[in-house]
Image (cartoon, rainbow, N blue to C red; front, top):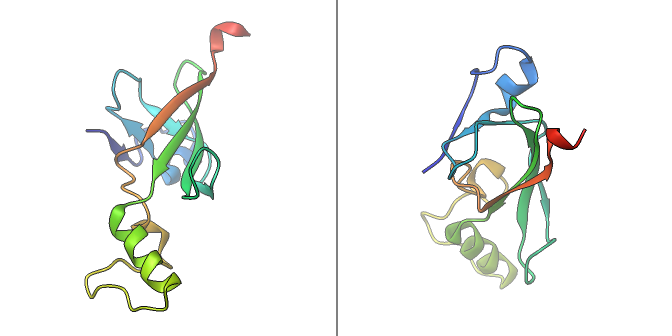
Length: 115
């Protein structure tokens, strides 16, 4: 299981705010360089959240998160004109959209060795 830790990279205050992904498979700690944004790229009609990141060696990554089943069900209920379940997450609050500690995928997009 990975986690997002805050404040572990003192070199750049943005990393402190955005967080660092630690413990995802065999990847080194990856510092997020932007807020995650939503897209339906790479999905079958669903959505994913994406952000870019960089490790201490300068390698760049694309990180993807899937939406949670509870968030998907709440959105589906609203699309069907129904009330979401009582314990459903607030679909307007993006902190509820994904399990931010569990990226669905991390892809190396640029190796520092290529420079």
